[in-house]
Length: 225
Image 1 (cartoon, rainbow, N blue to C red):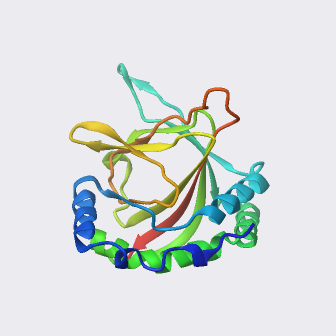
Image 2 (image 1 turned 45 degrees about the horizontal axis):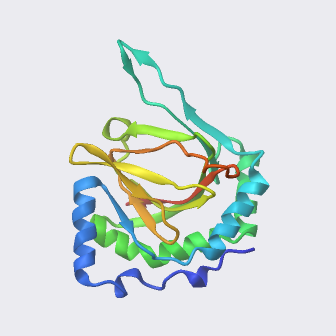
């Protein structure tokens, strides 16, 4: 099934009161992120993203860094799969681009960026442009450890993510008042991630007696000019 760009809500902030925008701005200023509720109908996106993953599941690039112990302290680590239209291998990049195009993901991402960039710009105070689409895939046990300012030196890079969970409950945790607090994944929500944001992605868990869990994150890379 092809993702239907017309199901994307035409304009998020025409459906929300002005105080919601101020709340998003305040949250972003404090935590370098914002979760925008129910900005898209992702019914067909769920099918298209899963189909793209199934077609490319033998080709994803393992994106991982092993933890290292240094003087009794455990360093940063993570493990997930990255399916990206930008890759070291031209053949791989072409294959991913072709599948994304055939599944309608490229058109959907361009439409999502067109509709949501004005709102994102008002939240961040930056002029942003859409750069490319990529897909992150978390299998059982995959995660990203706590990281933020010390790992992020590109202050012009932003991500707008649409997390999709299959047979699991997914989340991101952000640093808030000294604790890593949970922001649950929810179909239709968009999550804006700014530079130098302290966060982690907890390990993906299997539900009791359930099938293999999967978390796909449809990610739009945005860049400030």
